[in-house]
Length: 530
Image (cartoon, rainbow, N blue to C red; front, top):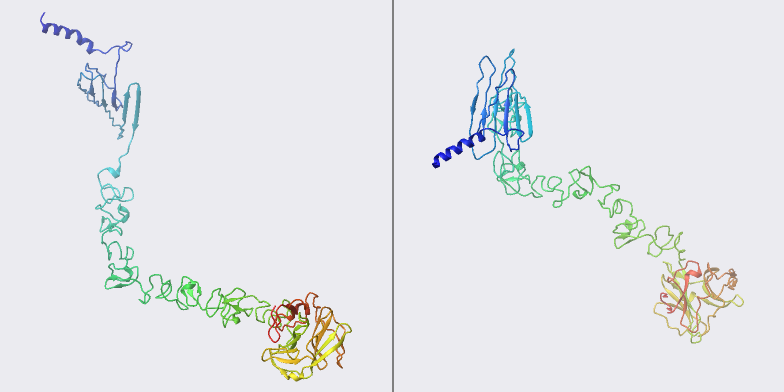
């Protein structure tokens, strides 16, 4: 048998097997996929589907149910290398009944064993029909229903345009203030004009409104100054206020008190200074106090003079509180640093016993009694006597007339001592009647300073002498204790250099316990020291 005959016979045997699909209940493998099936079915039934032998088959069937017969058109293509079959059927059935049109699109997709079907019914879209209709201002755009038109589209109002700018009946994009171009009515790139921000210095301008500085000179913006007759820069008013210009006068605008010469910015207007405006202004030395017009300032406030302070004491530019040692009569003092409820009693001004040294290491040969005129006037010593009284019998044992010294000037000292006792120049002196043991050593003893029949001053030391007999007619018995008796530990010594002194020097508060103290440095004829 020839090879050609053999091959022909084999083809005849195989062809039937390839033309007929296996039955559903066999074990053969079948993969069939129907991609799209569209059916319009109203009053007619589509003819049966014809299955063709090829592995891949596409069939398009169009059926119109009218008085015409059904027409079926089939197209078949076969690809022997593919085992997938796709069948598409498009059937349209249209029925016109009582001027009613009904169009139904049905799409069915089958893959394997899954089937998905969707059905949609749509009305015509006026904004996508390619025509200018309704209230559209251009084809499918503008108006109240459709989207705004792009640049170039016709328009009646800005809202018809995507750019929101309708110029001369057409949509346009307006010049921008940030596009890097000088356009529109800008005076320089992206600045100036009536739409963009004002321009910086050195940029082009037409008038002051085009410039941040508000000053346009020779068509160029120039920097603000304090004499350009324009409110610009950080000024609060024309050429005043702010951190660089002079302060504004009353009536000018202000942002803070610093903008005003008065120091008062009331409701953004500079106002006159007053003593109750809670600001330091005018001639005040501190807020609402000091100076010639306002009340004196309190403790801790600033001042220029003592008169600026309620305490009367301005120290280093600050008012200090009233004190009993500030050298000023203030608060409730009745004298300088004395009197009143807080300070020591004021010193009695006049002639006082100021220092006494009645016991020495060398056998009491350097004894002295010192007097001081603490007043502001000279004192005539006529009628003045110093009486020394013994505590053993309360009687006077020595009396010294001071009238030979004449008069004692304010602040001048007078010393009673032995004739050879040396005293500073300018100091008055009355000699004792001997060189030693002229003043008794106490326990107790006392000294009285008398003018005529008046006890001027007294001192009782190393005990209290309250019944001292001065021996002076008209004066009689007196107490030598002023206020509180001098404590026993305040006494002279024959083993240490000491003296009894008034501290502060010359202070006489009529209280022995506080007026007197011990000094380790006797100073006859000079101011006392501790």
